[in-house]
Each structure stands twice: as structure tokens, then as C-alpha cells.
Amino acid sequence: MTTPQLHAVVTGASSGIGAATVKRLIAAGWRVTAVARRAERLEALAAQTGCDVVVADITSDADVDELAHSVEQPVHALVNNAGGAVGWELIADAPLEAWTQQYALNVVGTVRVTQALLPALCDSGRGDVVNVTSTAGHEPYEYGGGYVAAKHAEAAMTRTLRLELTGTGVRVIEIAPGMVHTEEFSLNRFAGDGERADQVYAGIEPLMADDVADTIEYALTRPHHVNIDLLVVRPREQGGATKTVRRD
Ligand code: 8X3
Image (cartoon, rainbow, N blue to C red):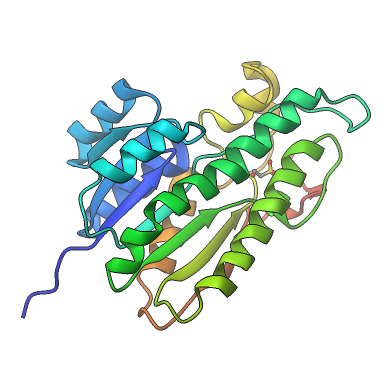
């Protein structure tokens, strides 16, 4: 008897960890639906990998409804990777808009897509929800308060979801990466300031997007009775959120 092909939906797939995850899962024989806002980037990824694409903004009810209706079933895995940081300020000075934006994207956006695809994941008979959070969801650091708070909320939501889905056959997995040098994470945080973005990774060998995609693939490909609750992954030189040892 041949094993049916597994199907994953990956959000935030137009670059970085999301795109790397699409590539890895396709190489491992999965069918993948890549979801992101930027159609051109998704089309390029589709041409390169053969993935399916859905253009959607996870902060939009209408887009996510459309995703739920258009995605082909069965869906065996949802990789909630879309997210990000905005700004670098003390809490005393941070614009509240940035806090709202980060909560809307990292927390509410993840919940929105999860709610929309949960029926399909349950119907598949072996569903997985993978939430890509951050070490910022487990350790605070100064100047990143809005992101730290949003990622703590996303991590707490993930643990709650696991309790709620216990017994349904759906695994809930959290991958918490530390410093990952992607083309966009720090650029977005620093409003397009490339020099500041590059300084984040100066003097260390950061994780690359594929290092995180590797851990996502690992968690997804364990026998289905094995739930990796939380996998924390960081560069060797980052001992903690506030301790990075750099070469001169
Ligand atoms: C990204 C890791 O260290 O910038 O989620 O918070 S960090």
C-alpha cells in the first residue's frame, strides 16, 4: 500500500524561514501550499519548487476565509510562520500602534489561520499545528518589549491550544528560534535601515532560515504519536536573549 502524500500549509512563505520550510518539505515529498501577501514572490517560489500558492494577508478575515475555502484537502500540517518585529524602543517610549500591530500579526493572525484550518487538520486524521514563535517568547530583552510580549502571548496560546486539542489526534508544536539572519526580519524591525539590521548579526555565525526549517521538518516527521512540544534553537554564540559573544 502506498503512503498518501502529506500536505502542509505554510504562512509567511514568501521569504526567510517560511520559504526555506516550503523548499525542505517539498524536497521531503510533501505537497505544500505557500501562503503570503506578495504574489510575485510566491509565483517565483512556485516556479522553483512546484508548491501551490495562496495570496493572503493573515490579518484579514476575508483573506483567511478565502484561504480556508480554496485550499485543497486533506491538510495534514499548518506551519504558522508569518510574524515579525516592529521597532526597537523602551516600553516607556514605544508607539502603541507598534504594539497593536505586533499583537495583530503574531498572535491574532496565528489564531485566525489556526481556527480557519483546524477543521481540515482534524479531518485529515493526523494533523499538526507548528507555531514558529521566538526565544523572545520565553525570555525578555530590553528595547523589544512589544515583540517580547506578543511572542510570549503566542507561546502561551500554543500551550493552551495543545491542552485543548489533546485527544483529537492533532499535535501542537512550538519552534522557538533565536537570532536568524533572514533578509527581512531585522530590516522590518529597524524600518528598512540595512546598516542597523546587519549589526544584529555582526561577529557571530547566526542561524540561517534553513537551520530553522530543518527543525520544523524534524518535528513534523517524527512518528505521529511523538509530540515535540517546544524546540528552542539558537546560534552557538547566543547563550541567551541578552548574551551574545561576538568576534572583534
Ligand atoms: C527573533 C529572535 O532574538 O530577535 O525572533 O528576538 S530575537
